[in-house]
Image (cartoon, rainbow, N blue to C red):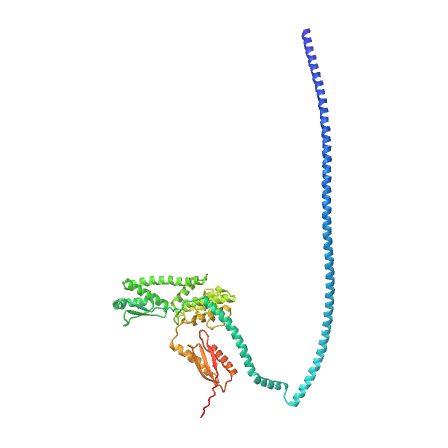
Length: 517
């Protein structure tokens, strides 16, 4: 028991001793570590101090450099500011001198203005005195002469008018020659340029009204049993068939060229088909009318495409296409309208006007001719109504109304369309004219010249393009000849309608004849 207790005691003592030894060992080890740590801390502090000093030195050096650079920059800026101040001072001095000079000038001008005002007042007073003296003198002269001022003025003006008539005529002649020279030069340049840019085909397109038959037996087949075929053709086409003794030909008669063309195509198709009876006639007419309408639209659309125009009502395009089947003095109206549009467009481009608007007005200027045989009124009024109906612009409407002078042209484009219309109608080979109309026009021209006092004879030459007037030399002098030429020109413009221009030439000739015996 005692041994067990002793063993336990010894174990306890060993444990306590071990704990004490461990504690002592740890304490010694801790002291050694703390000393080592202190040494390390001390070393680190020294190194930190060293680094701190080095960084402080570097910062001081950098700061010094920055300070030097800043001082240098400040110095340069100060120098620049100083130079600017000096320049501003110089400018300010110059402005002060200029200001002083302007003030001196203003003062001088003010002094001059005051002097002028004073002089004007003095002159006005003198003028008043002169007017008073003049009035007294005039009153005295009226009393002496027995004429009033108005009567004397009228008498003097009458004398001056008589004396100056020749000088006035000479002055008008010179000014007119200069104006004509300049205007002719400019207008010829523009018109020639326009006509050169547009070269239209001068061949005329006649509407065909005669249908050629393969043989005379075909006439009987066209007439049909008891005339039923010819009656059907006339009923559905609206044209009259004239079948006479002309070999192998029949004539179509109608005021409507479009209907006449449909009838021609229908009859030619019937002849080729060979089956001629009322039912077949109606079938072919319906087919031909439909094809013809498509063809008319193609003509209208082709015209718009050639001119570069867009946005037009389909009904109006169809009417444009119908112009292909209209002629005026042998000139195809559609080709004439396209030609007018081209020339008007070129002229508009030359003077800076709207080229497309000029082309549109030129194309539509004769649109009334497409249906003028169906409605009452001239093609001008019908065309204007159509343009209003399809919402065309005021420029186009005015161009249609004024291209024959029925109304005043309110726009430059309207004048251009009238010029282009005249050019297209008067170019060589454009139109045919009947002998009766030709002779009548020449007689009217000669009558205008013969009605002038002092005219001996008048001759219309060059197909009515020139009027030569021979005056009586003992009654008309050279200057009066120019007045006669102007009077005849004015009368022609007022009384006649004609394409192109008419040249008026007044001839005054003196022949001294003696006979030696």
